[in-house]
Image 1: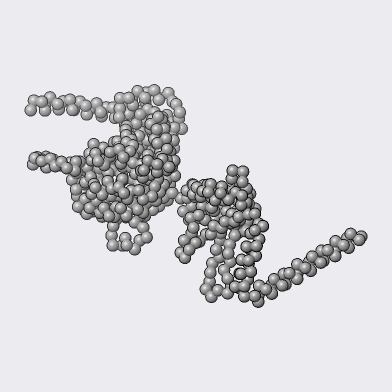
Image 2: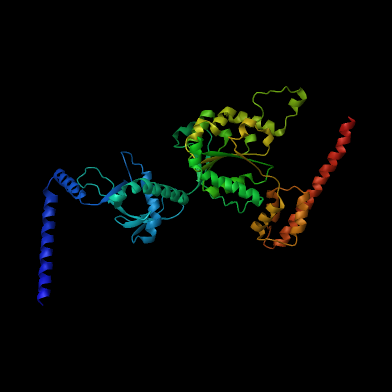
Length: 482
């Protein structure tokens, strides 16, 4: 009974003391000038720092005068989103800008623990409330505060923070919405736009698993791409800009555009589809390059048809009157298109775009050219160092057919495959034609019927090829007689 009374008296005394302290603190806060309170807080902090063994680092959402969100804050937020979603009790869900997923992060004043190389650290999400006495409305400013023991200062300030920034950036890249960009035509309204590129969300479903290609060749391309994406330190060590050029060439319908989409999906890169005929001159071409971001693929499709960039620069062969009259339809259309667009982009400007000094602004870029006629391109444009890897996309092989059969018909094998393999050895057919033949045309079309359609297409292509060969053979003696 005596113990109970003693405990009651102790709690009553403690409550009275706390109430008195809070009353005195309220009076000080209300009537004491802000400058004195601030000075008192600084002195208190200096005194306690001699005995307090922990160090605190604050990373604010906005820094400086401009209201631009801090990259460091965004990286920390992305890094903690993984940890906080597992152990934090209070979370907030946001759809961040250019993000395809709902991102969970810890709510204000929530605390999570992290570990790095056996060292424990603590992250707290907090915010600074605006002063009520201010004449102008101010927004609250959020920040993250990192707390760790002072004996681990060197490891945390160097290795751990670098680890947080790297992991946070990678998380943001994984969660972002990838985009497909294209350049508009240069006109007087361009000056009112913030950027020279227009974009939509990139949602092409092509992957290397669905790409019709021989497995060995496919694996070689995948390894080359992945190696490039992880070679930042290597490119810095050898003194080269972190970029790589790919030349995709082959007949129409062999999957050059699909290959580009598969590359973008593999590396999680944005795609910039550059239309050269819409570029006014070399200066505008450089501006377009500057506005591209890292982790991107810059594509110029059908470069042999874009501008007059083919042939030798220093050789001008004399042509007879008959040869001038026998211009091909493609060349005539190209010249007419060039007159309409009025583009003044030169081969020299394009070469500087690919590997000149300006090409080093930013990093982790892939430049892709596609063409149906590689022999028409100027050798300076496709030499190693500019187009580092040349990839020929040719007619469909039997191995590539099996990939398409798996994609379209979900077939790994079939009795008709032997006949198809035999016909494909004697016939040239593009993957686009194979895909069209395997595509079901009605709900009643089963796998066997689609394969029968494909066999029929192969036989027709074989007969057409033999007919052309016979016509060529018949025309040859007549040419010799003349």
